[in-house]
Image 1 (tube, rainbow, N blue to C red):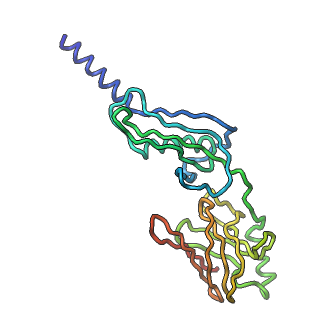
Image 2: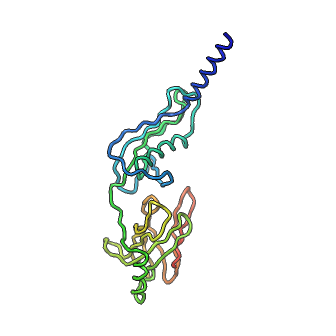
Image 3: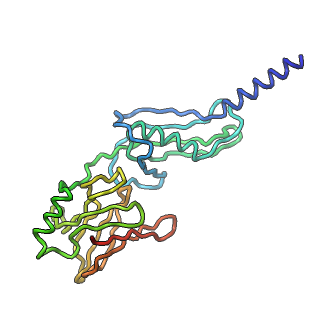
Length: 245
């Protein structure tokens, strides 16, 4: 009888601990896209945040507490399950819909999120680095001081090209990616819209952050070969510095 009790006790605890996981449900709304590698950065927005680009919903992921759980997990682990599904479905962004903390009846975090795909077409510039350097050499005598190749330091270093372009209302120059290690920002992708400011040598930059959030930044360049973009994060001032090649 004792050995039988021990066996039953062992099986009970093994079953209880093995059930200490949440379950993941998925409801598709539109066709998924090509899967993204797990290192691909997908931004997450909470209920109050606005996604900076138009989107459509690919589907909804729900993380639910398992039926037989004894101990709670943590938010990072459960969020990781949403990220995994987002990469599998080729999502561009995640919008959190609900987050419920563990309680006596549900020891795990429970979450629901929409997986989003961008519904617009982001502007690109079809100039190779070689073509742009040829442009700089050909127009060297009358280039604007802001035109040229600029190399960033700080968050997610990259190289941009700035060239005259007034194809969009209110814009006089455009800055586009020449080289970046961020897969969200391949070569040719627009990074900055630029117009001249009221003062000589000044410019107004409409700068797009890594998740395409728009920031309007005034700078005074003059003949300087450096400018900075303030990107506050976590209540701290952080800067991206661009230096002209």
